Image 1: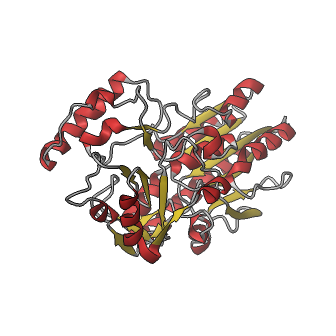
Image 2: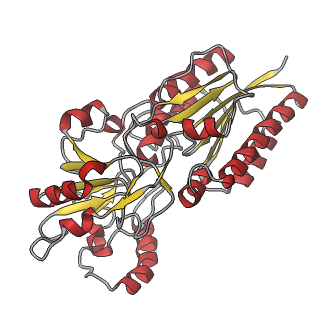
Length: 375
């Protein structure tokens, strides 16, 4: 009798529109379609996919939130504003010092957050959601441990090709679930755009990996069910805006008169209505402020305001430059409204016994049902 194994291949940023353009999975998977996402970046989408809970429920939305008294970067409270060249060198020291002082399991980067403001912020997530106990809500990994389901995981901590090779070898083991996550397509599209030939080349490599897994499974007497999905899509950048420059004036300074965090597609502000109004003017028709009711409907309502008292969202294709994420434009970005077609992820499966989820919030229950029927 063949041994059942489920392969989960999570491809960061493989949007439905991108998969359709390159016909990815069209011939291999009888079940395929768009997958709804949540507002935010992977720091919100990955925990939601793994737990089935919204950002407001599991607590992780953007990578950075406002700090409490015990923030991870509080030791920098006396750091003055540094010259740009010196700040770049100091950033490496700050990262090493923060890692030594805090038990941070989550992925994070300091990007270009001004170091003299860093103590005012903290990470939205400290634990690693890919590890049991890493999130405030139960994830698929917590559930598999509790149920005694044997699984193997490969993710961003090791290189993509190394993970592919290890997953192929693991078919000979006793794992019931092989979970492979890659973020390298996301990084590529940020550089080259979503429909570049390099994207087609990378997707051909992913097809090759999936074909190799199926071939090896047949040779080893394994009945392999495959799920391919993504956490969100990606959009080509067509314009840039600079709300930061408008928010700061001779009389109004960031860090003194108001606090703000400028993500690539969102401006999150604490205090000073004038700063909020200035950001709204710059965004103009290319963005808007999200009211509390809409944030509630999106599952991103945080009544304590830890992620911002005013949330402004850029329209699809609009990039905030400069921001705390970078000082220059990139080719493509995500983190736009989840209703936009290019924000949607994708879901493919060759397991026809379980109805596919409509959004990433349904993935956990989908996998639980599939594994329940396999056992």
